[in-house]
Amino acid sequence: MRTDKLPLGVWHEPKDYLGIDWKTYNKMPEPYREIDYEEFLKILVCSGWGVVATNFKQLQLPEETGGAASVNFFLLPYNCVAVADIYEYTWSKSKRDQGLKIDSHGKAYHCLRFFKVGCDHKFREMSVKETVERGGIHDGAFCHAYICDKCGTKQTVDSSG
Image (cartoon, rainbow, N blue to C red; front, side):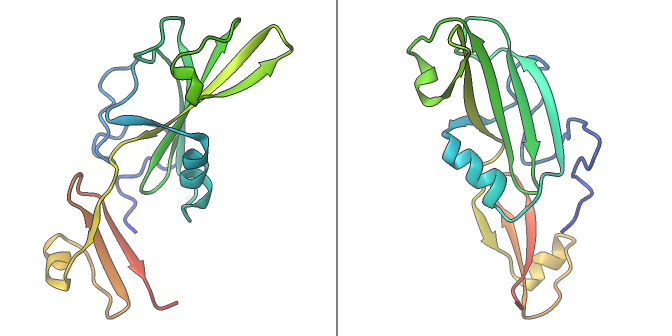
């Protein structure tokens, strides 16, 4: 796997990673969509990849009218997920129904909302010729190279076992 576009260790907002646009500091990067905590955990824990970088921002979610949400971003080689912590003194029914409510000593609540940030990949396998033309290395019969036609993210899998 090529790591030249991954923000390993030290956070910076990668310009060409997973099709994410980080242009506005205090808003969610585009594209993003809200997901439930099961999908969040599936991507974060069960994808077969470890986290390569994290970031923390305080930002305003578009549908929130209160203060800023504390958002942690987790970048993996082919995905980015985020969890927003919204601290409230009263529980209101709104978009938060999808969030995970955590009681804070009975007087206030944390509402955790989960997001998938970046491209929802649609990978297709590339031929040996296309892999080489796109600057990749094809290492034989057990090498499978894939590309997402939506954002250009590439991955290579060794299926030899």
